[in-house]
Each structure stands twice: as C-alpha cells, then as structure tokens.
Image (cartoon, rainbow, N blue to C red; front, top):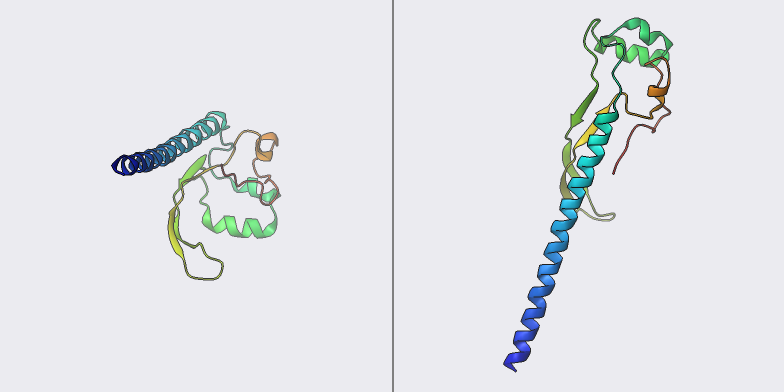
Length: 137
C-alpha cells in the first residue's frame, strides 16, 4: 500500500510540474513573440511628414474631423510618430452574472506603420477605412 501512495504522489507532483512548466513556457513564448512583432513594427515605421502641425493638411479631411482636430492641435506643435498606451480596468467575464476580473493592456499605436494605406498615399491626411488600424496578436 505504501508503494501505491508513493506512485500516486510522484504522478501528481509530475503532472503539476508539467502544468507549471507549460504555463511558464507559454508566457515566455508570448512575451518573445510580442517583442518580435513590436520590433518589426518599430523597424518598419515610416517617418511622419510633415513633422509639425500644419492646418493646410487638414483641408482634405471631412468637416467633422477638422472640427475635432482644430481645437486640440496647436500650430507648429510636433506630430507624434507613435504612442504606448496602457489601459487598465475590469471586465465582466460572465454572460449572466457578476464575475469582474482586472486587466492591464499594453498597446502600441503608430501613425505610419509599414503597409498601412497612409504609408502608400502621398498625403498624410488620408485615413484607412474604419476599423483597419487596430491590430492584436
């Protein structure tokens, strides 16, 4: 009987070790793959043109977009090539109850990523179709 308990204990410990190892490997691989994607995105990013805010560039945009951008942009201010955002909050993970879980997201936003419609156009004011910018891995 003692040998049976010892065998079960060894199997349980082995199974737990495998589960822990797989979790650590998955987390390590996720971090490395994400870092690789971000590096490729950064390496292929095109320079922002123009470098500073120029309101003549807004003239080709729809009127509601111009109305939004004119008050928030300052003439001559440097344009951003990208930003790292880290939104946090809680998300209800249940369809029919209250099961709120915290989350932290790191998001990289670039204005002229390789292959984007804006990088192929002559004007930096042309925007891609709605929903074309977000990317998740």
